[in-house]
Amino acid sequence: MRTEPRHQSADGGQANCGTYQAILFVSHFRFLKISTLWSSLKSVLTTAIIVPGYRQPRRAYKKLHAALCSAGYGVHHVTFESSWGRYGITHLAHELQDQLKPYRPEQTFLIGFSMGCLVVRRYLQEYGGTKRYPLFCAISGPHAGTHVARLAPGRAAREMTPGSSFLRELPAITTLPVERIVGLHTRFDQTILPPSSAIIPEVENLRFSVFGHDFMVRSRRVIGRLLEEASSA
Image 1 (cartoon, helix red, strand yellow):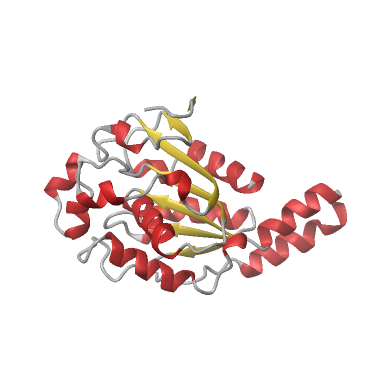
Image 2 (cartoon, helix red, strand yellow):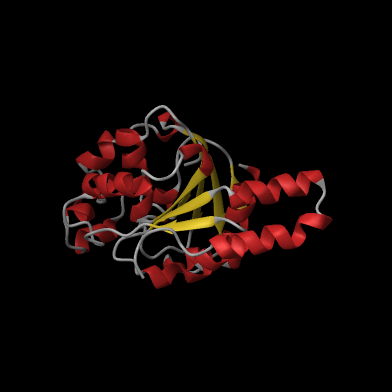
């Protein structure tokens, strides 16, 4: 993994992690130091929101989901009416807003993968409000578009093509109501073309030697770093 400098160019609903969280917390309570106790309590009170990519089935996030649950986080896996974005990314952002209503932003962190990164950005732009999320991890998102989208159906695919009006209208990511934004990507990405499109200007970008787009949400190194970011948020 390499850290790049700044400015470098099933169904939805709450996952059933609650029982596991309680057991995890109570079983270690007697042996925890104060700092560790606070870290454990914070994870129990925090929910990770997974926003999936274009036509991505829930099973693709099995390892990520399990790792988050094991760390004590609640998990909400977002599901869309049209997984391929028939009505566009703004419509998906509206669906995301509906699913996030039960959660408090300060006790929630966002994980976007691929198209899901753009859905999160549009959601924060349109519906973010004044409350700030502590963390947004953007994994292999086509922030500058991808030429592969030219071959896919749906309005969302057209919006992900380089130079689209949708991409031009997105505000600078640093203006969004999030305390910390981290981009994670691989140079061996066959879906985000060119791979440099996954680099987000003006935030920290982390590059991993993961072979293949879909394996970014299955990689131990990527998931491990994501958990590190969540624990320090």
